[in-house]
Image (tube, rainbow, N blue to C red):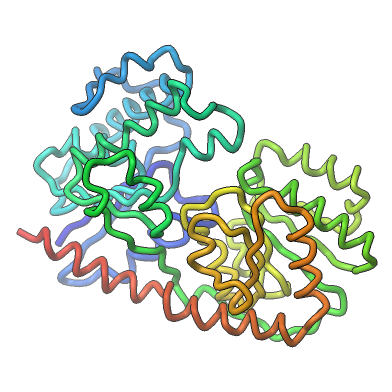
Length: 374
């Protein structure tokens, strides 16, 4: 069976699609399976010229929005690149972004299409203060979900909470299937260590939605309470300079290291003690599962897929989003109680190995794919 995994941009950033899809290929290469990746290079801009029509709504009533214009042009560019690069048919296409899914269905209308929705573009734009709830941009982006429902043979997503988020925007939400991300266990190698000074680490894109500003304020309060620590921030993004300035103003710059983008953060994480990410929204939160597989204690917010991964007090700690005091108290608890920290990390590792293994995901995907075999 010949399958195309259609991504949006190349899988370069840690987390989400990049954590799973490229690692599927080796598991599917056999006499019975053939799998390839396809994505739109970031250098492709403004190439596509095709007309755009959707089956379930008229996008042109939203075209005054620059966000909508950019979305439509990227859709055209994806079609242009697909025409240029794909010359052979596939038995099944599994898309991992709405643009990829809609473009592939337009190009290959007779090929079965599965789409996994990994996150909400409109939620990220709202949290990052680029669009407002209820705006024409928001209405356009949420209308895309109904279009996907009309075009795809199956819609999947990565958590029950995100399935609930999608429900108001489709006609048959009960048909959406949940399959959480899976991770190649061989990539993660916990390392026994004893850090005299607690090492905190976070891995994310530096955007407001990730709540790193909250983390910096909580770390400043930890310092005021007299606790030594080092905070490692792996990732880059548009607010990096702002966050660095904040660390200076909060007088924790000497305790904070900004690394920028790192291709394989899982090689660095095992030397730390506590993974903390106070996201304001997460469809799944792949980096929590990755940190768990590195045997770290987890501290996260009670939002989206994070709360499905972490059982508070059992395999990590959950705090409300935007709550500096609660985050500070949670970090203080795991810093000061080494036995509790170890038990959290052990339980997190055990759950991640069982629930989020790539082997489990591969097994389930094979059953799904075989349903479309001719």
